[in-house]
Length: 98
Image 1: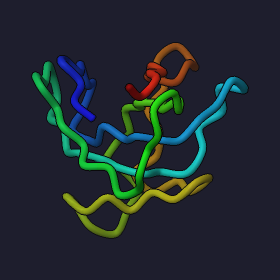
Image 2: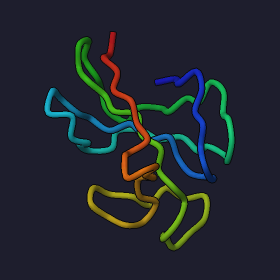
Image 3: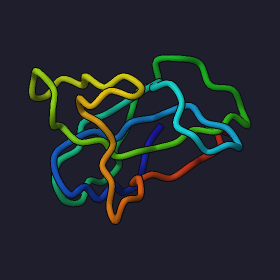
Image 4: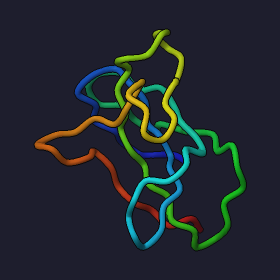
């Protein structure tokens, strides 16, 4: 999955979650590092097959709270490398796979 542009308030991760019409973030199936500021053409390699029509949530996660810098440590519900919020809203978008 490639995002044409990602604006990040701090160094972190572009994370690909499975989702559905309920719009809740599901399991993580891919991620890519991002730096503070604007990031162009960020590509996250998917670790699972995704079928045409499936919904994916692209979300910005931070680098904070983990044991190692530069290692993605988040699992659902964890605080390590967790989602970034702006005005109490997740920084994310939902796409549909082709």
